[in-house]
Image (tube, rainbow, N blue to C red; front, side, top):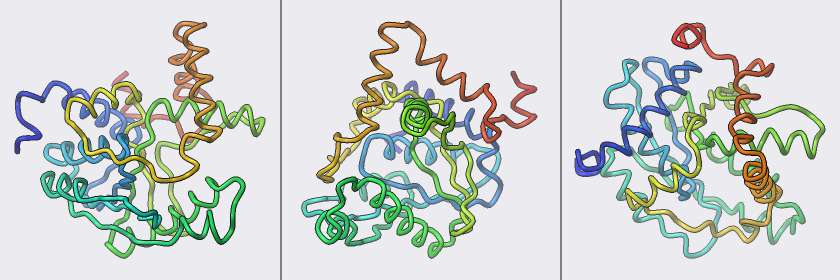
Length: 255
């Protein structure tokens, strides 16, 4: 397969290395798992698609994949290139059509639309994943997302908290995994350019106008003024007191 050719192995190998480390550290994949990858059309989810499709070829625990895009109903969101990429990587691709965009922005006219939209999207995604027989789902949250989420929790909620590498969703009976937690966003951008990923612009009217975008800028400024602070913030999470971030005993012995 051309996408996995020797000419590009270097960058892909780096992505696979980070992904495998996260999967091993937090025991994300067991034999026989069927994993639904959430494909938004952004660079992160497409990098995750590459990573898991590549990992599937050699990981000792055999697993299946499928990819799902929740279509929010915005006009002009062309998914043909993403479908072609999934075919090339031999990952079955499904589009779950919804009217979430209309509900959030026209019917409800939400002043803070992100929370409701995220809730509805996750519900639609999990329903489709269960319909396809998946027991796990994979989101493309990367290292920068980890740091930003922790800071947002501190700044806006007054709590030291972050999402978990592995989360069991009891309502949908699906385990959510985040295999890109060791991958920096800058590396994903480089991967996007090197592999010419078919990234689709987010059609959401609220894109880029969120608290997360503000927090991203804050992390950048902190790291410029206090060199290395970004890495220290990440280690405060991975080596801190959050129970869900404790690595498996096997991973601890490897260290």
